Length: 322
Ligand code: A3D
Image (cartoon, rainbow, N blue to C red):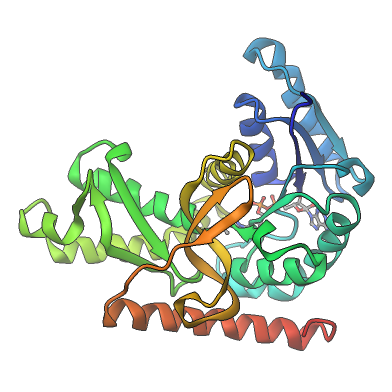
C-alpha cells in the first residue's frame, strides 16, 4: 500500500517543524509548498530533513516545491501559509494579509487535493479556517482548524507544573475562539479524572492560583511572542496539528478540541469555532456538545461574538465571501 501523502502549505517555522515531526513519526511522504522569495525554504528544509533520514532511520520521501501540482492526491494538507505575529501585534492584525493567502491556498487545494483532510493553523484561526473552507469549497467535515489542542496543551503543561504530576495525567478542555476570549473549562479539566474544582477543595492549589493559570493559558501565545521577539510559537503548534493529522490518517476517533464547523449544536448554525470533536477517517466525524453552566456559556458566547466580528470583517474585505 502506498504511503499516505502529507502536504504542508507554508514551510516557515511551523511548516518546517511539521515536516520534521511527520517524517520522524513516519506518518507519510511529505511535500512542502512555499512561495518565499528570499530563499527556497521549501526545498531547503525538505532536503535537510531527508538527509537526516539515514541517521534517524526513517523511510519517507520529502519534497519541496512552489508548484501546487506537486500536492496532487494529498491525504492531508496542513496550512500555515501567511504571516505570523510580531511583538505588539494581535492575531486579528493579521486578518487582511492572511485572508488573501487563504484565497490562493483554498484554490490550490481545491484544484489539486480536493479529497484531503485540511487542517488550518494560520491566524486569526477561526476566521481563516472559515475563509479557507469558503475559498476551497471542500466539505465542512474535511476542513478544520488547530487551536484547541494547543491551548489545552498549554493549560495541561501549566497545571502539571502546579500540581507536580505527570503531564500525561492532566486532561484539559479549552473551547471557543483562539484568541483572548478562549474559554478554558476548569470543570472539565482533571488530573486522572479528578476535576480541578475538587483539587482546589483538596488543597492541591488555590482558586487564585488556578485563575492565574487560566489567564496564563489565554496569554500563552503572547508569552512566547514576547520571548522570541521575531515570530510566534512553532514547536507546540506543530506537535498539536500532527496529533490531529495522525487521528485522521489512523482513524483513531480521538476526542480533540478543534475549530470545527458547528451546524445545530451550541446554538450555532453554520459557524466555525473551537469545540470538542471526534476526528477519524471521516475527518471531523462528530461535534460533541457538552453542557455548560451560565458562566461558561457567557464566556463561550463572548468568544463566538469575537469570531463573528472577524468573519464579518473578512466579508467586508473580500466581496466574494457571502
Ligand atoms: P512563518 O515562519 O512566517 O511561515 C509562514 C510561511 O508562509 C512563510 O514561509 C511564507 O513564505 C509562507 N507563505 C506566505 N504566503 C504564502 C502563500 N500565499 N502560499 C504559500 N506560502 C506562503 O510563520 P509560522 O510558521 O511561525 O506561523 C504560520 C501561521 O500560523 C501564522 O499565521 C501564525 O500566526 C499561525 N499560528 C497559529 C497558531 C495557532 O494555534 C492557531 C499558533 C502559532 C502560529
